[in-house]
Image (cartoon, rainbow, N blue to C red; front, side, top):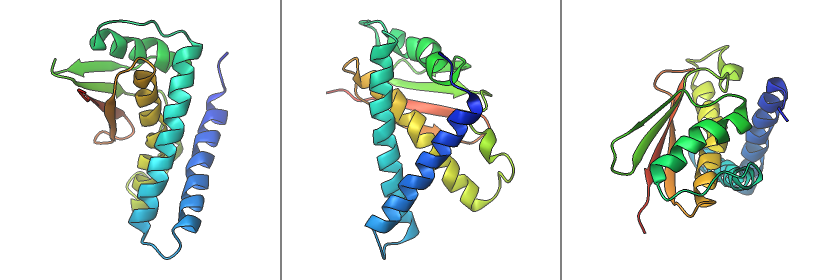
Length: 166
């Protein structure tokens, strides 16, 4: 069951625009940064829900090792979500993982004007969904983490996963 890439792009972009609009209405009179922060949080929470459900629906195996779980997210989970596995995984073996996606086209929708300030803001909001999805997949296995996207090498993106000890 593979979803068309153009359909996924359109749906994700619409989610971002809708959340921005909802946040703007809810925070009438607030500054743009606060509106974007609220939209990011809402999109990330939506992604967490999607990630948890996807992890269960693809029967992501239970493992005792956080590293093994991250590997499964890079391979099986990302493949189910975006049609190809992550391109790289790096770790410092201290609870920090960097997952690299070099070119599945996740950010192709923003390629027309990558240096535009609004594009950078929209791209980070767009990446809140996959950040939340990674977080949700980890939570489905009782692992808490902070997940952040990095666009240093746009259009490639990396996701830094910091495991939170309880």
